[in-house]
Length: 266
Image 1 (cartoon, helix red, strand yellow):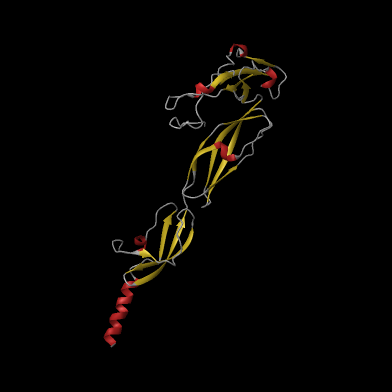
Image 2: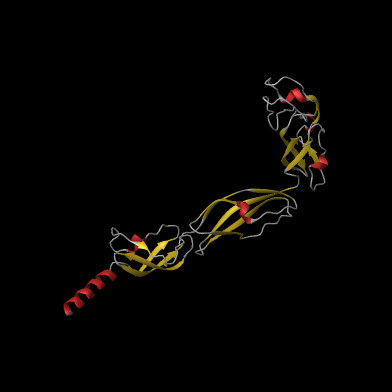
């Protein structure tokens, strides 16, 4: 009996030495049950009542690793030691408009969630270009400053005009300014063709570029007719149309294709 107890004690001691009591991992790195084993080639898995591990959240996790006939307790510490990274984005806004700090940064890379904030609050009431510093802070407390630029425009950045309406006036583009003039020949554009046009202006001695969208938002006026014909004869949507009035080119199609095998009215 004594020998059995001694043998059992040795066996239990061997089992407890198979798993590390503490493990450390960098955030974002995948963690498996084998990572807790002194011999990672052995088979192991996490017990159902083990703490769920979120590799994107730094902290302390109490896990239960099952290997062989035994379940072992261990502690996992996930730390975020790497600062986030991001690419600066130059932002243009119209005078009077504002935007959030996240507009100045793209392609943010980090293993944990990143908070984006202003390190220095920009002045959206001051026309022109100014430097803006954006602070990136991850869950590990690591910080990165991204240097970007803000351009506050005295003219609208975009203007939408209806097709066929003719050229807009200078006042349609200017937000604020004492002296303004067109650099582009605004009258030379084709206002019957949809699309975007680049318009250059000069306001108080500073040159600006804006985009003019020529759109058609007015539905066509259509007069239709009934069609009487033989079954199986092909039909197009245009067969039902008497006339169409619209400033731009139109196309017609069936909302639902008629059943040309059906004899009768539909």
